[in-house]
Length: 255
Ligand code: 13P
Image (cartoon, rainbow, N blue to C red; front, side):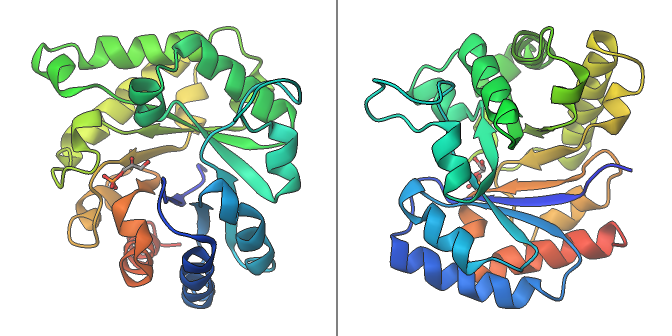
């Protein structure tokens, strides 16, 4: 059985006070839902939010991590520090990190391994840009991202990874992928994992869809077996919307 997960990536939004406000609202609402929920607040709010959510079914994670545990890396955050602040998860490979901050597949691999070695699970994001999609290169791009970042990693590390398929053109645009297309990519991702590891590795991997998820469109994704949940940006910034997405997931997956 794969884990069904709802994750909210707040990106560079919300002050500490604003983060606390929405976290309190979510804590109250989500107690009635049997769902694994993860929030990725900005670093400044991570500790206070993790304290505030103690005893709830909502975990917190870091939106980014560096692979070294300490040292002269001005502006970076280490896995040890994240964990101390309450993070149970880390996002690696988000397209904004890849495209704005030039993160490579090789760097992403180091981040994944370091986070897992330090006791956290990773949401590893992959996805194609619009021009890559239009050139018919979607599968090639995703295959490369996965094959480099997960090359040679031990099976026990793989067990701590969740993959998020986030087509770059669908992020923050209001234009989500078609649910069937997303499901087909999820299936493709599973086939890559089977090829890289052992048969069955793909079937065991939780794969989330991300990109313009809203309460209005999420049911179409959540009803598909290939889709094990969502990584939500904009709609996770509103308590009601994120909760409505959670309710849809619980209903569709019969949790
Ligand atoms: P949106 O839901 O705002 O499109 O963002 C998706 C995303 O990038 C989550 O990591």
